[in-house]
Amino acid sequence: MDLDLEGKAQELAEAWHGPQGATSSQPALLMVSGLPGTGKSYLSRILAERLPAVVVSSDNVRKSLFPAPAYTADESAVTHRLCRMVVAKLLSRGANVIYDATNLVERQREAIYHLADKAEARLVLVRLTAPEEVVRQRLAQRQECRDAWDRSDAGWEVYQAMRRGAADGGRFQRNVIVVDTSQDLEPAIAKIVRVTRHSGVRRV
Ligand SMILES: Nc1ncnc2c1ncn2[C@@H]1O[C@H](COP(=O)(O)OP(=O)(O)OP(=O)(O)O)[C@@H](O)[C@H]1O
Ligand SMILES: [Mg+2]
Image (cartoon, rainbow, N blue to C red; front, side, top):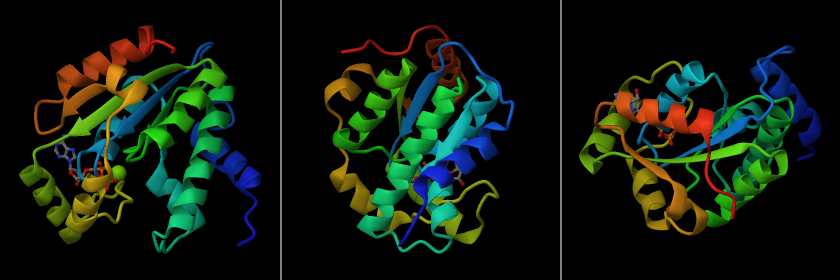
């Protein structure tokens, strides 16, 4: 496929940030990670209002390229590449960015740390969890009736397959804020907003 990724990244960054979106002198990049159904998109929407920040969701980016995705390795590679380009463009405009993707593998996360370092953005790492039974119910509910903002197609089988490949490690393990989304979210939201506004993680 002949894709103009640069043009597409510019188009998405402008659409999501707006021509005159809010800016700050040192933007933050908040990476939200977790298995399907752990509540990444749900929490990202809330955080985007509180911070404020622009959400770059890998599901939205994927569907902007592939309206009927096949979830092949090639499709995922180009989706993640475009995600990184949009994140970089938004940070360079001074926008706070929430990157909403599973981000389960340290090698993929390293590309995001690199983006934050290059943009001199504060980096905040969040990993969402929820008890397996809660996730199973959420994903079953998704098949029945999907929230309007939810662009994911992942179900229970995808959750089980991805769980096998998930791994903490490196910079992630040392700095991540872990949130159980089956509990009251307010204390976690308050902590993430505080950390995002004031510090971010140490550089290594
Ligand atoms: N904290 C929560 N309280 C109540 N319901 C929640 C919560 N978090 C998520 N949900 C519900 O669970 C479902 C899955 O959540 P969400 O779409 O945010 O998961 P996700 O991690 O983004 O999954 P995916 O990786 O497939 O995109 C949604 O229907 C959502 O409304
Ligand atoms: Mg999601």
